[in-house]
Each structure stands twice: as structure tokens, then as C-alpha cells.
Image (cartoon, rainbow, N blue to C red):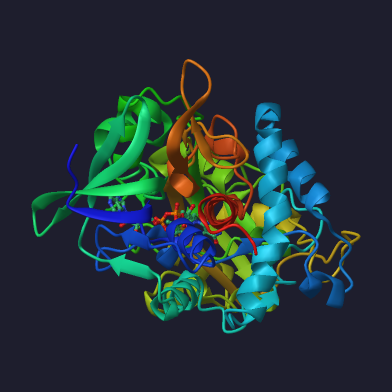
Length: 457
Ligand SMILES: Cc1cc2nc3c(=O)[nH]c(=O)nc-3n(C[C@H](O)[C@H](O)[C@H](O)COP(=O)(O)OP(=O)(O)OC[C@H]3O[C@@H](n4cnc5c(N)ncnc54)[C@H](O)[C@@H]3O)c2cc1C
């Protein structure tokens, strides 16, 4: 077999998983690491995410008096997903999470803060970490790319998609990439698949995630399932292929999202008939997407008050929604009903009987009374952000063969791997996506530095 190039570690995909894997592997200074990226211009999901990092047991939580641990984090994830078989992976990722959150803050200078105002379904304590300016995933990607640019032994090769794996005797020995459309073969001692999932691949979505039909797609065009397809071609096992990160607070016609903290602050969700159809706080935004999908026209309306609004506006996605004109402010019920096309009598009845309970202001869930005008309101629909299933890996990120054992030289993480959200859209807990991306990047990169790098002297 002849090759055009040679590296120690070839990473396919330059989102959170690929960048963290490269940075951690490259700590072994003798290793040559290359990240092949399909297109920075078209983007990665990490860039468009809220950049919320779930981690249990960080110094940021300790400073805020929050008692948490990787074990508690793992328990919460497993309770929501119900996927006991994923426990070894979940525990490994949760152990990595506080370490990479502190690494981002202390070594890469990322402005990390604990989002105390970011309550999410299933999280027993405040656990989402974000950047101080709440700029979200764009800020996270900038931090990681700056660190990659400063690493002397990492090449970030943009506009050069991976096109396949090279295998000899069942072991992966390299990758094929397209450089200006020309196929080149790169020899690598290890290949890391970090190309995310398949939510932008209509055929794969129809086959594996039929529940997502008709949903707004809020992810990037690059998530076409390439890596999962190559793995399958080599006999890899896959798992949780029907799982996806859905969203119930996508604004129709705009594609932005309302802040998922709103239901937890006491916002009211009504159908187009002006009546409630779900307990707003009883599920995460992924499962909420499924409930809204079942409503007439797949539409609902979220209504919140001034106090909730002030808190919710601390997020980039809410600021984007405001800029897009995705919600409106109303001083009277008549104005609210007319503007949103809701039957005024039914809406009056619903508002009269609704009590906003704020977990933000009162963790004991004390009744805060009815919603008071002025009120804000926005139409919401269901969306798909990313898929959550993929190549079956062990807790060190090694890809497993469907006949048992591992496929030598091959690792996968983030959206290319099997995920930790169970088999459907209902098992997703906020933060799971970036946890599987940064967590596997961390675990795989550290393993490669330890196993391929020079022995310690
Ligand atoms: C709108 C939105 C909001 C979200 N908010 C959150 C959140 O707040 N918290 C959370 O935990 N999760 C969130 N998620 C999910 C999270 O963003 C993803 O799970 C995570 O970013 C996946 O990381 P990744 O590194 O696997 O993939 P990505 O970040 O998508 O990176 C994959 C990269 O691979 C590249 N690629 C694809 N195919 C190839 C190929 N053949 N060759 C080379 N490169 C290739 C792509 O161009 C891309 O750059 C959100 C997702 C979306 C869409």
C-alpha cells in the first residue's frame, strides 16, 4: 500500500471533539497530528451550539457552594436516558468533564462561569458551565482553534474532507482525504472520527429517525454521517441510531430558539387553542419537541413575564431571537390573543388558572401567583439539532466491531459515536452533546498521547 503523506494521528472533523482530541494528543510533542476539516465556512455544530458544558464537581461549582460530583452527573444522565448499557461510557465522560472544564479555564484561558440561571430538566443541581459573555459555541470554538493554531505539532487542514478509511488486515492504517478534489492517502498510526452525526443526511434520517419527519433542522450542513458510513463499511457496530437532539422551542419562520430556561422560570405553554397541553417543567426541550410535533400544525405558543424575560435574555440565542423579531411584548390580553391568533376566552381561562412557579427564585417551588402583564410571547415549533447515535465505542473511544473486539487504530467520539442519550429523542439531557464531544476528545487524545507518544523519561 502506498501513501502520499504520513502523520501519527489523523483526526477527521474540526469541531469540539476533533479539536480537543488533537490538543490532548499533541501534548506528546513528538507526535504529528493532522485535523482534516470538511469546511470551516460551512461550520460545525459546536460553533452554533449554546456552548453549555455540563460538568459535575468543578471548582466553579464549589466556589458557588454547589455540591456535585461526576457520579451524581452520571446518575442524572442515566435516569433520563434509561440506557443502563451506556453506564461505563457515561461514567467515563462525566469523570473527564470537570477536568476539561478547568483545563479550558486555566490553560486555554476560556472565560468559564457556572450558569446558575440555567436550570434544565433532569439536572439535580446547577451544572451547566458557559462563557461569561454568554456568546456560546462560537466563543468555545475560538478558544479551541486558537490553542490548535499555537500548537507546533498540529496541522489544521481546512476544506479537505475525509473521503474514507484505509485498512489493512482489519486494522485502520490511514485515511483518504480530498485535497482540491484530488484523493490523497494519508498514513496514520491512529484515526479519530470526529465528523459528528447524520442529521443533514435525508436518507439516513428517513431510515433511522422517522420521528423527526417535518421538523425544522437547526444544525449544520456538514453532518452527513460520513464517518458512520465508513465505520459500517469496516464492520463496526452502531447503537442508538434512532436518537436525536430535538428542540421544542424553535421559532417557526426564524429558526432561532427561545431560551430553554423559560419553562423552569414559570413560563406558560399553550396550544393554538389557547389551552395547556403539557407540564412545562416535566421534560427537557428534546422531549418537548416531540410533544409539540404531535400538536395541530406542530405549533404552540410560549408566554412569559418581565422577571423571566430579564433572566432569559442572558443568552446569545435569546438575543438572536430578539434581533429576529421572534417574540413580542403585550400589555393586554386582547392584544396578546390577537397578535398570536389565540382564542381570547380560552386564553383568559388558561392564564387565570396558571401559577408560575419559579425554581430560580424559590427552589422549594413556592407559588408565585399568576402571570402579570406585560407579557412576552413567541410561537414555537419542533426541531432537530443533531443526531445522538453512531458507532459503538468503548469507554476509551475505541470503535467496536459487530463481531466483538475493537477495530485496531480506529477511535470515534462526539456525534460520530453512539451517544449517551438512549435510543430515542426523549433521553437527551441538556449538555449531553458537548459532553460526548469534549469528553471523548479528551479521553481519546490523552490515550493517544500516552500510547503513541515517547515513553516518559
Ligand atoms: C443549535 C444547536 C445548539 C446546541 N446546543 C448545545 C448545548 O448548548 N450543549 C450541548 O451539550 N450540546 C449542544 N448541541 C449539540 C452539540 O453542538 C453537538 O452534539 C456537538 O457540537 C457535536 O460535536 P462534534 O465535535 O461531534 O461535531 P461538530 O462540532 O459538528 O464538528 C464536526 C466537524 O466535522 C466536520 N466534518 C463532517 N464530515 C467530515 C468529513 N467527511 N471530513 C472532514 N470533516 C468532516 C464538520 O465540518 C464539522 O466541522 C447543540 C447543537 C445545535 C445544532
